[in-house]
Amino acid sequence: MRFFTAGESHGPELTAIIEGLPAGLPLTAEDINQELERRQKGYGRGGRMLIEKDQVRITSGVRHGETLGSPVTLVVENKDWKNWQSVMSPEPVSEKEKLKRRVSKPRPGHADLVGGIKYGFDDLRNVLERSSARETTMRVAIGAVAKKLLQELDIDVAGHVIEIGGIRGTLPSKLTVKEIHEKAEKSEVRCLDPKVEEEMKRVIDEAKLNGNTVGGIVEVIVGGVPVGLGSYTQWDNKLDGKIAQAVASINAFKGVEFGVGFEAARLPGSVVMDEIIWSEELGYTRTQNNLGGFEGGMTNGMPIVVRGVMKPIPTLYKPLMSVDIDTKKEYKASIERSDSCAVPAACVVAEGVVATEVAKELLNKFDGDSFERLKADVADYRNYARMF
Image (cartoon, rainbow, N blue to C red; front, side):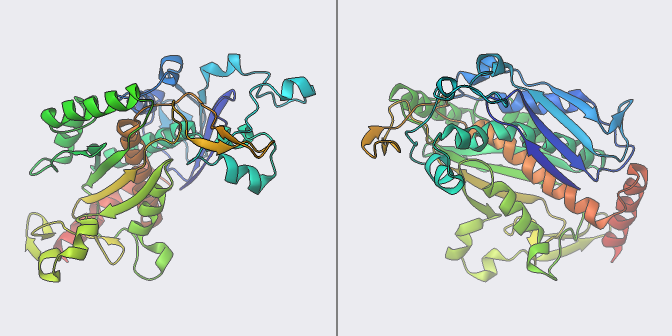
């Protein structure tokens, strides 16, 4: 399974093509729209969410509610396109038209300046239109398809927010993945602790009032994962490495950890390692999950636990100083419509990219031509692993 995304932030539409899905997977537009709606929610979102109501059109690869095994194409319309048709026209325009909405003042923390230098653009809009977090719409759409595949195989995915702007919640204990999802869905900031939620909202309000932004930490848990996804035999076959790359590729994400993560540097091995136990009902499990469901780059049957840290969004309504690429003089950076905090939305994106990597690895390991055959293969393998 592989995918590509295309489209600009203010272009006519966003597109994704997914190749390698098995035939016979139940899939409807509503399965995807539910996830797109979740991405647009969250305390701290900006004005763009009032304009767009993302709805997907499936234009290939699905017939009568089931995948065909051929490439699946997903399209999401940008409703704001009507206001940008001349600015973002694919056809040649006059020099006067080219100057409309031209960006010459790069924003600190964005791809604007580096992208302009790399590709030789004198209008930095050419960079920011694609580097925008609007692209994550399609990664959530792809993640929705991956989640549907995993769900049909009894694999659950949930995400929640651990920290926003220095306000930290407690980690879930003795909650199932489904329970974590249900609790997070009831919170505007996707936090499991109602008391901490109000503190997080206060910090977001203060940032908005001051023209500032705040970041945070999200956690994604995947339960029911079979043993042995990924491989130790080559560095680029390690599934935790693939997931780390996927999470770090989300706009504004700057760090990834699994299980106890960086805390492992401060603990002895006797505390960090997860002792192995066996029962006839569950097969091999661990007494704890400090390693976040991975050993040697492979899933060990425990829930995958991965966290990502999101920096504050660089677009500030009280902008920092920059340099105009035309005059080389200091100038306050340009302002594009933005959020004061997108951590709750980014949590949904993180769920999507993690689900996608797990689904890809499942389809690498098992027969992926027919969904019914895939289900049978996974069931047989789970029984084999339990009695190994």
